[in-house]
Length: 358
Image (cartoon, rainbow, N blue to C red; front, side):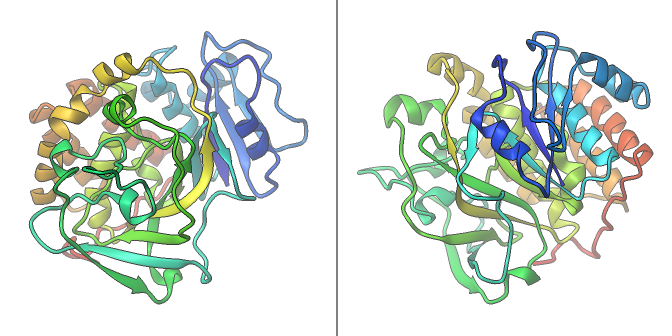
């Protein structure tokens, strides 16, 4: 089960990378770039693979049409790593950043001894903020919130019901987002006005979303199962502070049509955040602040017309381009991503009858 790590131009593997490299049940794939200092030395005999410039060019000779659309020195190189893992038989991927350190022996996984609650929206509001429900700070006026929550839903959240899931193993979960202690994934507005660090309290409950709810998840500490591997492509015409959030929202809308769900796990990682310019982050996240609400409203009302998941994926991306959420280059790249997955032998899940599976 490959784990996908992104480099932030450190001179050596971080604590997070070295920890994952020692997991016997996982293979580690680290994606480098032209500016990555080499050699990048991973533990011997650890099932770890560093994709430097030469390794990427060799692999991409089989998927040239897809790879040539991804510039060097760009976060989009991670898409090559995803494809590499899938082409080599990945059944699930632990998608993490090199400043997120595992606090547990393994990435989060569902078992019959976890406590899981389902949240279900009760009105026409369709976005869920998992942080307050899972022990994040409540604050005097506003609760804590993850990067990507529509700003208009922070102080007036969507209404929802909660019920316990009797057998978590019966839920078809395609995405598991681990929360992070110390430096959770919050936006620049939160960091500038409320501040971090903070930890989630000691609750051990998991949250799974009903199919009428959306919630942002990231590319920093997330398990992606085989039924959701198609969704890993990171759009490249938006900023890196936006791309994984946009991906999470539109992927959830498509997962609804194959009966796959998103779950949030208690913190399995501690983020020791790499240096950031918060005012730079504020500017980079502009689309999140101004477009997340309209994106979620659109996705909640969207209905696809094509009869296969690849076709519906392409259809939705075209619709997002037409409404200004993505640029045309991402439409072309998603088409190439789908073709590359098929060439790699990936089998797309089958659509369910009406896309209303709960």
